[in-house]
Every structure is written in structure tokens, then in C-alpha cells.
Image (cartoon, rainbow, N blue to C red; front, side, top):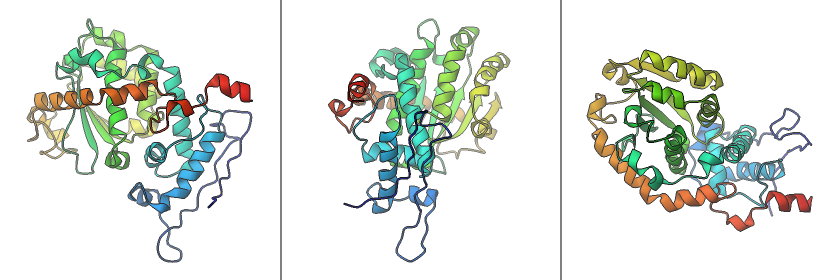
Length: 327
């Protein structure tokens, strides 16, 4: 059996504390002597590449030794690759992201355990959300949220946010999205006081966590269009929780946005309603609604699974009670 240096040092403190660290895997792979591959180069390798195995082994061992919210016997390669690709194969950062994801699911059961497209079908049928069929020039997925289609009288902010989480779970399984990340357009036309009152500080923190350090996706850009003046207080509530890297990727376009959006997205990507030549927004929303509905069973499996790694049968997960007994 092959072995790889793990270098994981456990302690009684949290796995994310400064007293615990992961020794980096030497990124030296290839056909010739001294051939080194950096994180972005490793990201381009196929899932089954032998060159990824040392990173998978190290992350798996580190994660199993860490004091996590849901101790498990193992993690699947496909699940771990999502976190490695999200952090360009930096094992220590990937471990932190994996543990944050597990903690977020535990702390937010009102969202993470209710991934049910049918429960929000009425909102989806208003053409609220789409994942565009065409990726951008960098290969990123492009998502659109039309806030004005959300009626706060009918749908809570948690129900609305669950749509974002369902989409994130689905596209995070795509290898190309793992590599290239996503960009989001929020159309704030129709934003009202009713919307603002739904965004509590607690929800703001949950949203910012998913955007920054608790979900295995690279957020490459956030674009706001039609943002009214009274949206700014809500934006000010969320902004402090975002890391500087994400703050630098936020772009406010105002109501005259066709030309400025074109600086970031080519014409074939965007719907005509946003200055492009792609699929119309209504049709794009309906297509993605159908995709979510077709993924209902998959999403339900993720929601009820102790870790979200549905490649590992749930009965192989060690419960907190069992872990306590065995300790």
C-alpha cells in the first residue's frame, strides 16, 4: 500500500486554530525530473489522475482526524475534489473550507435540510432565477437572480436563499464549474422595504459565509443592476462579513447597465433583456427550474445526509452519540 506524508498535527482545540496545520504536499509531478505543477495546473487534471492522489489522501486523513461536527469513517474522492479545486489544491485551505461547510450545514438546518424545489415552485415559476446555458469567456457559470419577482408576502428570505443553495449544490458537482467558478447578476429592479426587512443580520451572515468560506465554489464576480438607493443599507449589512477578495469582485452597474455588463460578459452569454444575444430570460429561468425539479431526489439525499457526501452511504457516518461512546 502506498503511503504519503500527511503531517497533520491534532490538538484539543478546533481544527481551524493556528495550533493545527497541514504540511503541504510537494507539488512535483509529471514526466521529467523536477517537473512541478502549481495549483491551477493541478486543477486542469482529470478527476481520475494519479497526480491528484497525494492531495486526496492528505485531505482525507486530515479531515478524519479533525474535530468536526459530523465525524465520518471516510470521504469520497469526488466530494474532496470539490474542496481541493475550490482552493487550488492548497490542502490546508481545503480542509478549512471542508470543515466550514460541515459546520455551516449543522448551524443552518432551516436551510441546509430543506433542499426541495417543489416547495418553492411558485417562486421559481415567476422567472426568479436562472443559470444561463452559456458560460462566460473564462468558463464560469453565470447565474441571474431577479429580486423583483420575489414577493416577500408569499416567500420568506430563507425560502429564497434555499434556491441559491440548491443551485450551488448542483453546479458544484460540475468539474468545469469547480475549476472556473461562477459569476452572479442580481437584478434589483422592484426591490422594496418588504425585501429589506427580511434580510436580518443573522441571515446576512449566513449568506456571506456561503459566498466566502463555507461552500466549495469560487465566486468570480457579483454584479448588481437596477440597485435603488434604499438597497444600500442592506448591502452595508452584508458587506462587513465579506472578505476583501469578494468585496473587490462586487460591481454596481445602476440602471444603465447594458454597456457596463458587456465589459464582463460577451453578447452570446447574456439574455436580450440584459443587452445580450443569448437565450431569453424567461426561457432560461424555465429551463433551470426544470433542471432543479429533475434534481429533486438528489437534493433531498444531500439535505438529509450527515455530511452531504452522498457517495458514502449514510449508515457509514458515525453519529455524534456513537463518536462519544467510542471516545
